[in-house]
Structures are given as C-alpha cells and as structure tokens.
Length: 411
Image 1 (tube, rainbow, N blue to C red):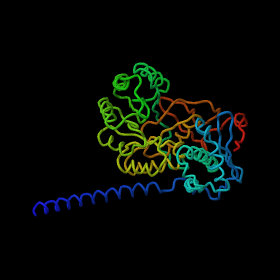
Image 2: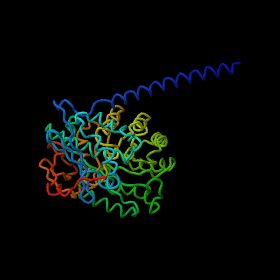
Image 3: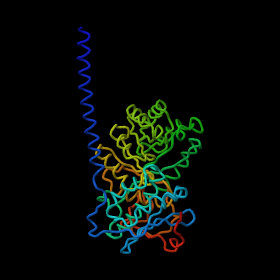
C-alpha cells in the first residue's frame, strides 16, 4: 500500500512539473507567434493605392528579370535565382505572377500569404513556389522604394547596418585539407573578410572525400587563421546524430563559432538532440520552406542561429517573420543567400534592417553577369565590409541595353 502511495505521490510531482513545462513552452511559442504576426511593410509611407497593372517575367538566355508596373507608371525590377528559374518559370508565369495583377502593392504582407492558398499553391510549397514569389516580391519592393524614395531596407524597418560585414564562403569538398586551406586563404585575401566558413563532411549523408579530410581541416583552419578569426563550419546535413556530436566536439576544441546543418535539414528532432549535446551554436534553415517548422526549431531550442534563404523561403517579408521569432527568443539571424544574379544585393538590404543580425554574412564573390550602375555603393568588399546601397528601391540601375534584350516569357 505504501508503495502505491509513494508511486502516486511521485507521479503527482512529475505531473506538476510536466504541466509547468508545458505552460512555459506554450508561453514561449505564443511569444514567437506575436513576433511573427507584426506587420512588416511600412504601409504608412503610401497615402494612395499602388495598383499593379502588369507583372511580367522577362528572359534573355538564362537570365530572368521580373518587371512590375503600376497604373501610375512606376516600375520595379528584380533579377531572379537564375539557376533555378530555368526550371521553375512555368510555375512563375502560370501560378504566381498573374495573382498580383490589379492588386494593391501596399498590401504586400497579406498578398504573400494569399498567393500561398491561391489555386492551391500550397501544394507546391518549397523552391517551386517560393523562388517565383521571392522574385515578384523583390520587384514590388523595388517599385515601392522608388515611389517612396526609400531603400528596400527602409521599407521594412529601421536601418541598423548601413554596412554589412561578410564571411567568405567556399565549397571545396573533394579536395585535400591542405589544398582546401590554400584556396580558402586566397579567397579571404581577395575579400579581406574577417570571418570564413568551411565545409565539413560530405553532403546529405555522403562520405567525406578524401577520407579524413574533415578532422585534418578542422585543426588546420584554426592553426592557419589564428585565434582572432571568426570561423564557421557547414556540414550540409552530412551526419547522423552520434557522428554529428563527435565532429561537433572537435569543432568546439578549436573554438569554431557555429556549426551549420550537422544532420539533414529536415531531421528536426535530431537537430535538437545535437544542439542539446553540444556547446557550439547550431545554425540552420537555408533549406527550410515552412514558417511553422522554423517556429518549432526556434521554440524547441534546436537552432541558435536562423538562416532563412531569401529566395528559397519566399522573400524578405517571410524571412523577416523568422528573424523576428528568432529575436523574440534571443537568437540571431544570419540569412543564407543562394543563386546567381543579384542575390547578394537583396541579402544586403535585408540585413540592413535586422536588429538581431549576426556579426558576419555570407559572401561568395561578386557576379558582374548583370551590368548595372550604383551611385551609393561599389558593392565590393572593402576591408571585409560592403556598403548597403542607399538609393530608392534596390539602389541600382540595370543597364538599359541589357534590359532591352529580355523578352516576356510565355507559357
């Protein structure tokens, strides 16, 4: 009888603790929800409706430009994620762009959500939907910025970072640790970056090549760049949980500053297990398509650094919702940027308005495939920092002759 009483007493105590933990978790998630629901676009900058008369996708070779025009004659442009739009343009012109015609661009926050359910587009969630949406959103923000005389960042928030410090990213898997170091050193010398990110493991559970490269490279990175350099490691989902923890401990020994995607990106519970086992901050989110999943990752403490990709996640408004949830949880946001064209430009504008931006942001080199002029920034790394353009919209002008070569894409 006493055993039963002891059991009930213990069970009751456990129940109270579990209830308290559940309440704390509910409060934490409610805080994230409140942060994510706050309006993003500054509608009060526009006294009158901005009706979109035309929304077009233009193409020249494998370069895609979105052009939007208002009924009052204002124009906005964006350059898409060209490497992916080659395959995705039918979705853009059939399912996404037509939705925005005749809509009021001031309602962009709501439009981003409404296009998700339009014609059951939610069934396409992922790159197929979000890259076309991001492409349109960037063009609309360029248009609105030109109307208001504000930069993209100023349309979304206050400017916290007029310059963005960069980390030099690389992808030298398949090379020896020694050759990888030599190439990373050359890249860092060219950009003068004060931070660098290197690759560990294979990609999405692939074998490390050459074998033993990762262990040797981890030690060489700190030895080569010294104690003052900020160093990040990216596994691209290379490991299972035990191996991710083993590699994470090697990274900790060398005081590496974050550990990105230690397990496959959609292994949510496993990501939390790795985070719980290590002291090094866990970064992730570049492949994540779902705001709800970001909510889980942040709320459960699986990530310490959130990395929505501005193209892969559907643009700045959706990505800023993630950044605000991260801020509510006391975390930083270091957005991932992918693709060719002007992706790095959109990243600069986004980071400029982030109060909880990480100290360094991704840089893979400057592409001059798109001829443009920019009066307010060289858009080059100067002492490891890039000045964010301050002109209206995206702050640059694409060469008219180059733009004229682009013709509307048809279904």
